[in-house]
Image 1 (cartoon, one colour):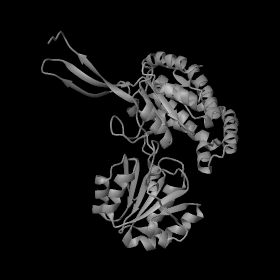
Image 2: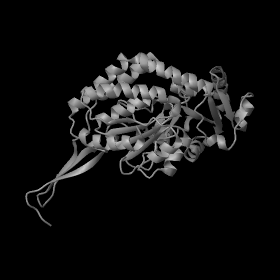
Image 3: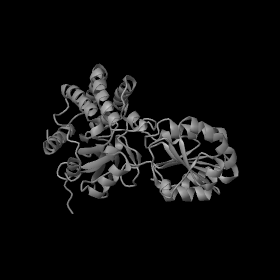
Image 4: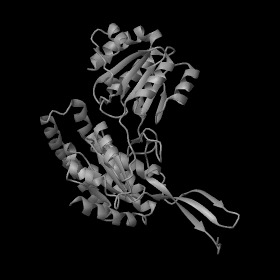
Length: 413
């Protein structure tokens, strides 16, 4: 089915979705979750074909990990849908209600955005996260995944759409663009008549392309040039645990740490502690001159490195004078995603929270927690790094807007 047909169907379905109650939406999501687990072998077979093709093209190990599905990951996708079932439905609730002196009663109510378009790359789990959140918040969804995951995405959408339709979802509410060409993506970015908001999820190139070319309103989700700052008052063992987790647990995701800043007072001790554990994990260090002097196998960092989101087992390391330089460096080079300080000093922790410009700022915890599920939002549709409408992990409420409902008894102006 071509893009325009999918978009027209989605627009029609969006009006039908507005009439669905919470109980029916929850039944739809539960049916989708059961279908994922019941037809898991079909999804795994499709994903295996995607992985084989990606390996032939030389995709990196970290990106292959993002693409790969396992029985546990598919069960996790199903549980994500069930978690959304448990969440309060934001649609129809009144944020506030006021009675004006003239007797008008004005209610500010939550309503769906309408049709949400999502352009994303090699993470098939995004497909179910997006569908689940859009359906629960009353929105139709138009998905355009990357070519590397097209077989997986096609299988997932086919399976959940069938289950959702049997449970009462309006036809066309879930659409997958199977043409993964750049031309189709650019066409989608300009479908103002059909798409109410566009959400890109992926690397810097994809985000930049959507920001520069879209005429549809967008919510900019972020590349994650995330930093860990080890302060002179840090518990160094804690700092090492946080660093290894933030860098190595899943290096290709946007909340992984890409840069390490270390206060000069404790740099020799901490870098000596961290060097071998990082090397054992396969991490390449790109360091400032001081770092390279302390870690002989480190590679000198370039000016471009400080801006770069690696999405790989690469870590930029810089020795800084203290918290002032750390905050200045982060606010200069970060992508406003997630930043962390490790310190036992309360005043420094509060300064870091107040002065670092990012959607999520941590004290003594890994940046890997920037996630809708970890924040109690159920699944997430992305991490917004902009400041208008939504910021940070976006859950159900962020996929709604407001409508003013005004009740009168004959008032005129």
